[in-house]
Length: 68
Image (tube, rainbow, N blue to C red; front, side, top):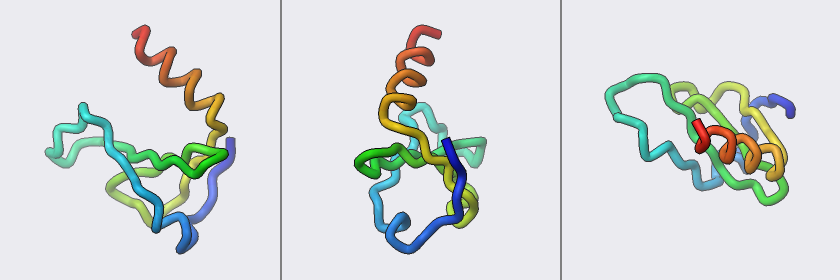
């Protein structure tokens, strides 16, 4: 896992918010599929650092979160 500053190519990716995001300005993250990694950023501050995790790490996280 690593954090980095956004680069122009990263900004061209398709970013997605959770379907649970209420859209009322609360805390929310966005994710993008970058091929070999999943990128995660703060939706309110997309110009700030981006967290990069491997596809396997993201899959494990989503499975764990789905279990509650």
